[in-house]
Length: 287
Image (cartoon, rainbow, N blue to C red; front, side, top):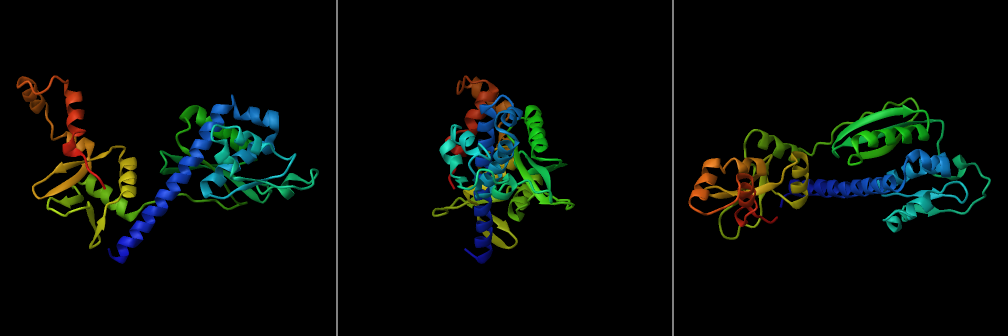
């Protein structure tokens, strides 16, 4: 495997690791939202510091870091630890001893300094970023988060973003050049992922910028998420190809189904017959 293959593999590995952290952060927010009637109720009961720290905890889960909690300043540990996956979330909180009368901004790593502008980063479907803000304070940001989840649900990535005051952050779609290449080929009607139908051929590969790269499970997941469709294997003259299910379905016509029915080969309706064929061993593959 050449150097370009190793570089692409490293990009895919990092993308998969980030996707795993993003899913953990979303799981934390789902568990938190399921545990309370309103996010505002957390502030009413435990104070705005606790509400703010819960949001910073989600950001710590996303980044793989941790937050600090001083006794008497916040109840973030108690709330996070009481959730269904509390033992996991507690690992991202460091309980620190200190003077109970110290100002929260001086002792808590999730401080609300006035030199920060607060934004809310939303990843629609996990890949289309939108930026809301700046917000007056963390409570205002959390209230916007609540209103958003009430309307859109909690299946999107929702993360706090703090930047130096006056700096306007710019966000854009991350584009892996290999994944983009595969998607563009699919959009053009091509079938870029192939494996020769010869003994000893073990891997599906993609030709990219003059190199033949192994198509691995991380790439498969990224492509299926963006397409919102699973890839299935189809037989061609000299190769097996991976194509979206929607395209593979075009090769099974109603005339084919009617013929199977007339010959007594199936009693399934058309849609069930179609799904049965697409789920058959003929279309199964391993990476």
